[in-house]
Image 1 (tube, rainbow, N blue to C red):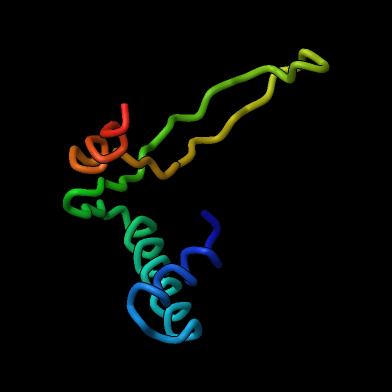
Image 2 (image 1 turned 60 degrees about the vertical axis):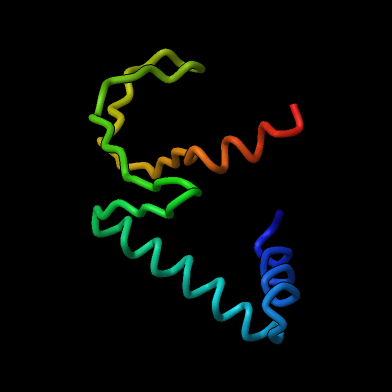
Length: 93
């Protein structure tokens, strides 16, 4: 599902205009992004958790040339699905 499809779905289910649904969806994504940027964990009950994982820097190799490359430390978003969403996904099986 793309972001525009999500907006359409929210508009249809909530009975609101597409523009208003776009504001809602964009606001939710912006708030989530700001929270994760501030190192806060996001927990949506019965859906899942969003956290930021920290990875240390390391020395890697360029596969084409074989030269050593310094890979800096980084932070990446991580999602862990909740129990209810996992159960809903596996009902058909």
